[in-house]
Image (cartoon, rainbow, N blue to C red; front, side):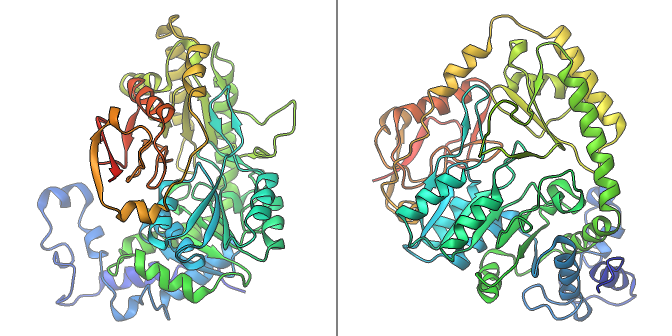
Length: 489
């Protein structure tokens, strides 16, 4: 039985940072002696003493045999995995590695259309062919949920040669689909279920949270430990269980997409975050859930505001559970877009959301939030509803904009072929029916609207322009002002 009180990697880093010696190795600042004074003033000297490289006592991320291996074994036990890898390039590299390890050039992978851009990068790197499924969609709220078990089963019947299924669990809004059913269907074809669980690293630590992906039957899951737990930004984990995925291929794939100079500050933060949750996770999540429930209850009582809740009247296979620490507030009843409300809350009330969309604002409530944060959030919305309400914009106005967006995408070339094809840059007005050669997505949450290989349609172009006009912005493409697009020549 592993002792979850231990922090082997953190302890080794602390000991090496405190050891008197003459450093003739990277990094160049040499324990902070060469760091710029403004940066030292901001962060303090101690952090640079711990910014070390792969010294003998600190193990090697790509061939762990010491403290990194011990820390990863503790993490595997805490999160319910058979093996865990620490990631220093975020969940992005974990998703890329998962696709690289299971799919080669020309292999099919089934995945939802609302995947993160990292999955598209995985398709480009691997040469895999995406079989896209439309997620269940709420046209009133303009929110895409999960893909359904029936959609996965139908896709596998049509493409029994697929090498893997990938799904998002939970979505950016905290919505969870029926992952257990999807896992069961996927395993009937003896292929692995890969899960982008970037926003669900906390699920394993409280019974009132949705079922963790591994417990639901996933073969591989990637979690952003930094997004909802206590690790530093960019620090994530990849977990696997069972024998459907070759561990050696995961390790080799990670060597392609991770830095050969991993930050030990990030690695140690993963060790510390694991220990914190293994020992205090249920208590921390209980407190977080209480804060979230208070915010949800109070904000839902403010006139013209509503919060995303579980469906009440009918079964929704794309929405079977909700992460209650994720708060999505619909503000369109105030005559405001989510982008406008976001700007007002941030500038006037110092309340900063995770992301805004046309009708909504979404907030991550985590173990780091306090009762004072919740009070500030509630008071910000209370004043917003009283003093900033407008009457010239209605929900109906917003919905017709959103419904004009098509969810049917035609893939003419594989993402890899289109990405590396000879391309040209054309004015936006001349790109209709051309093949896109770049990723185009409103951000956040980083879900592509166009990707390399897809045919550009008039409705998608109009949707992107509408998002921009309403206050959103476009990322991923060469021209962030969206005056031009890169297309296959």
